[in-house]
Image 1: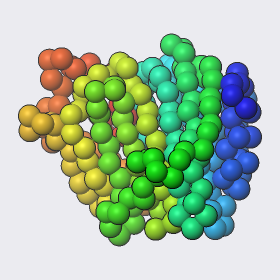
Image 2: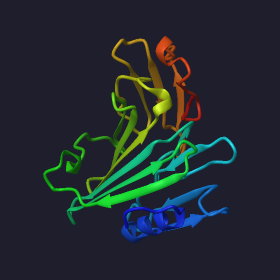
Image 3: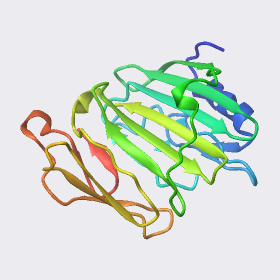
Image 4: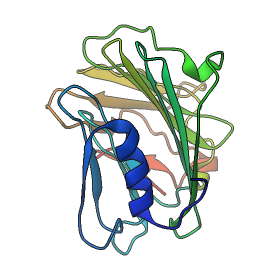
Amino acid sequence: MEETQTGQQILDFYHKYSKGYYDAMQNNFADTIKLFKAATYISAPTAVQKMKAENNGIVYMPDLPSLKIEGRLASIKVVKHRKQQKELILANIQFDEQNKIVSYKEKPLPKTSPQAKVTTTNYQKYNGEYTFNKYKSLKIQWTQGSELTYDVTLAVPDCVGKFNGKAFFTDQYTAISNQGGNCKIAFDFSTAGQVKVSETTNCRTPQTKNCKFDGEYNLTK
């Protein structure tokens, strides 16, 4: 399937490959949708096209805190790699200016693709990196054990160049700072199923003063 207008079709797509199950609440994908993990398989993440009247988007990650982005979502890219089965799937969900899903595509990646590499950084529970790059996106990558790697890219056109750096997270604490060294974000994973984010220094540079992180892990325009 190359294109769809309905959230149900996207959920069916993820459900087919994840062997998990989903719980779609009221309004057919317009309120809150979650993908849960099955007993022995971590399900793929999914997107919420529109949250209430503010046009917000939420991405739920199994066993990880939710990432909420307020503002426009341009696209979400999902790559998963199950090591033993050599399974690679790429899903790309596109949004319009009102955060409505306009299309998604899925295709297998070649085994030689850089995206196919399993993360080797070893942390107790999870590892990942958060990067704002020149492509105006926030990259999220994490690994569950040694078997499964997810790679999600969320394009945030309203917050270009907010951070020019990366952060690796564990189950406890880490921080992020930009190249200039004047932006530092604290991540606190001490509470199960929850993450707290705080600015330890002022991260709102003159070029991006309308973008900031708050304590609920929101990127607010």
